[in-house]
Image (cartoon, rainbow, N blue to C red; front, side):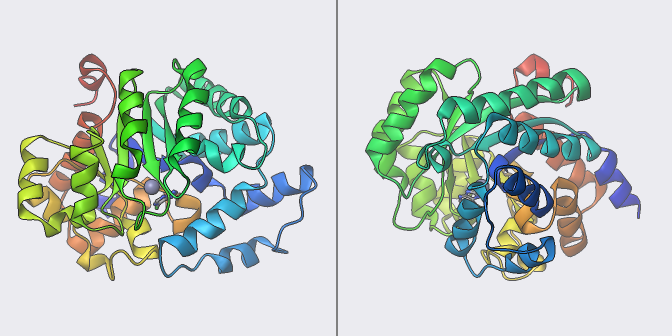
Amino acid sequence: TTIETFIQHIPKAELHLHIEGTLEPELMMKIAKRNEISLDYESVDEIKKAYQFSNLQDFLDIYYAGANVLRHETDFFDLTWSYLTKAHSQNIVHTEIFFDPQTHTERGVAFSTVITGIHKALEKAQNELGISSKIIMSILRHLDEDSALETLKEALPYKEWITAIGLDSSEVGNPPSKFARVFEKAKTEGFETVAHAGEEGDAGYVREAIEILKVSRIDHGNRSLEDELLIKHIVENKIPLTVCPLSNLKLKVVKEAIDHPLLKMLNRGMVATVNSDDPAYFGGYINENFLAMSEALNLTAKHVHQLSRNSFIASFLTQEEKSKWI
Ligand code: ES4
Ligand code: ZN
């Protein structure tokens, strides 16, 4: 259809993408084999069949298990490069990717191994595909403050490569306030900050991320719609929401595609963007996310254009870099 062609061709920025969540079953098996790691699965089909989740924690358990095959710099390079070629094929011209260092350092893989592999692939993508990028180091909120502070310390020698500090993993029971001191230190060190909030947690989690962590973007933010005063604050301060439609459906944050709040967010004047989150696990990259929403919510080319525009506005590019795309 014409909207499908429009979605494919319009330049886009992706702002909510976990690099560990781009590990396709084929690559997982290939890396497992060369690292001599035995998997719980015999085939790609068997892996794909296991990807049925009833909530966020269900998914996280499988996602952390999958990341266990990643051991060497080349593994992180291959993972990242594979995502970047896919992103290029979908007309992503700028991407801001999350990585979860603690997922790797906790099992003995060095911080430097992880970030160097990712960085080298991003550098190659800038040179060969013309894709610009930023790295967001995300803190695992189910772990304690000490582990987060230690991770922030490990990031300092790589300041040049890391733009922002984020917060992800199991939301309910691990509110933003748990990391108030970590985010204060991150800001003092000159990092931008973002946080996952309002995915499974209620509007109070979004409020804490904004008021206590003082983040410049909210990842997901769905449940901010439950609080009128909060909506007003988000609109007036133009705090972007990085929304992930297929993720929300797979993790049962939203029941059906037609119930997705994306259009409501746009109509309320929120700076919403469309992103793929963990595309290898949720059944689609950015264009499939756009397409699912355009079909369910009857999005027009105007909506798609606004969402693309929002993705650059909400990015960590400079005004001058943004002006190339908006
Ligand atoms: C995540 Cl969808 C989602 N939510 C929270 N943490 C995450 N880490 C990777 N994907
Ligand atoms: Zn996420």
